[in-house]
Image (cartoon, rainbow, N blue to C red):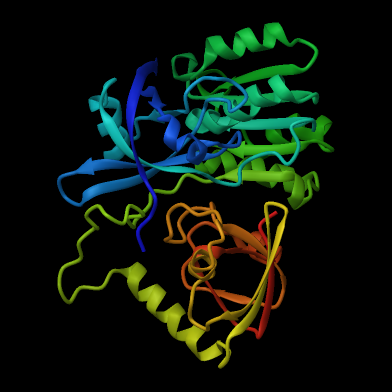
Length: 365
């Protein structure tokens, strides 16, 4: 199934640090509605690749939807990271990139809530969007803990300084430099977060940073509903349906293919024999269908009905299509992003879920 993507022109490329660039896009008026977004969401871009035709990567928006500024992502060079290095080294104003509409669920339910934000390195990107939008349109207090290797690595340093000076009653920014204080430990993160244990927490950054921070929040008994984390995952598939796919040699099956085949066989063994009743809550609307066919993925079924369910990668490698099962059960064919706690909470990936029970009720709220 072809994925709706758009060719966008690059308006500007700003050097934030030696290794980071902010890339702004011009969105034509006739597709502007496709690029309405919430703070904390991301864009999926098609980076040209001689080997595969395209390397699909997700980059968070740092811009705020509460302003008239163009949608802007920030890309930080990573060691041996093909896409990030290509974008930092090659992209210039006037170039074009194929882009999917905004997606993702790393966004506050209420911008009036008190927010404690944890960012490590380039993890500041979606956090910056949340912070700026909350200051512009919300009323709550905001505390940002921002960890970096050293002072030269700090992205948006001057902007954060100006925002803190302009909103002293609402915004506190705390910088943590590894060159001065070492890596923050779980105990140190717990001590920092303790005064904010009733606030909504958002965490984004390198895996060790997120692991320590989330563990600290769990120790403080932050409930799952008030604890959010964004994970960086390189997409292995190609969500751009009309561009070249990653090639696999004839007769060769990748580990991911093997896992998905096993999961598909398990799902086939457990699936109902008749069409399934499906109830869906999405964006304040309720839908009911009695013809969800066994073996058909949830996202595909909803699309066939004209329901605009969220998605990005279609590969089970991002959380854009995450939903919560309220009744019944589904089987995921592939999952690279949800952890055990997510699964226990009933969260599933719509792009990989097939029905197991005769009736399934889900919500995207």
